[in-house]
Amino acid sequence: MSAAGEDPRLAAVARWFETLQARIVAAMEALETELSGAPAPREPGRFAFEPWERTDASGAPGGGGLMGILRGRLFEKLGAHRSTVFGAFPAEFAAQIPGAAEDPRFWAAGVSVIAHPWSPHAPTAHMNVRLVRTTKTWFGGGADLTPMLAARRTHDDPDSVAFHAAMRAACQRHPEAADADRFKAWCDDYFFLKHRNEPRGIGGIFFDYLNSAGDEQNSAFDADFAFVRDVGESFVEIYSEIVRRNARKPWSPEEREEQLIRRGRYAEFNLLYDRGTIFGLKTGGNVASILSSMPPEARWP
Image (cartoon, rainbow, N blue to C red; front, top):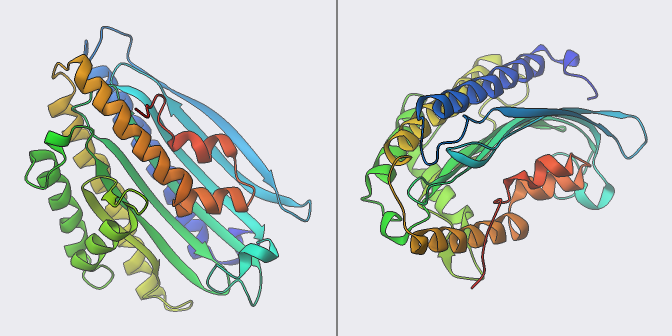
């Protein structure tokens, strides 16, 4: 369980996650270059990268990753991170992970992106794809959109329509692995602030424990992996389109205030409910990467 070399499928997934991170970085930097003067006449932002390593609870090497952060003229803060980690879950956490109660050893790899644009008209967006192996093997992930302004946080808003259409299309291209209606409903249920009785945003898709492969059937594993790749690529394409159509729109101080309050709600979800945050902290991940999903500025009125 300590190395992807024990299963070439894991190594192939880890290599593709490197490709996906590079694709995200190139697309977001291209937007920063393309949309000159928006929303302010700053230089186009570029990612700063920081490699990190972790030590497992036993003291042995436990993998690591590459954190990428961009602060620019379109994005107030954008994180694009990759990790490949392994080791053993702490006993108190193992019981919560499928297949880890029998054997706490694990291997996990993933890519996550969280974008907080300057413009209140450009929605915050999140995407994550991952593969986890314990005594079981599964893919998880999804993508969701959080418009900052109440007037834009409707399901008939053009951004919402386009985003849902892109995620549904990715599911429909892989019917053997994905169920668009189920994954949309799962996203709505997951990204919900129970203490406020309100959704975090307008949703998208969410899936976990995607294991039509079992642990041995390569053809089914390949189908799941193809779907996960499509989610990553579809997100990059549709979110780039949404940023382009919104980045140059002017905004008022009142709209900035509304954006900051909505960001506060976003922070509440990530600290109280987000599985990725909990998983990263429980497994000794890089704290800066894990908490980079937090908005750069937020407000609680």
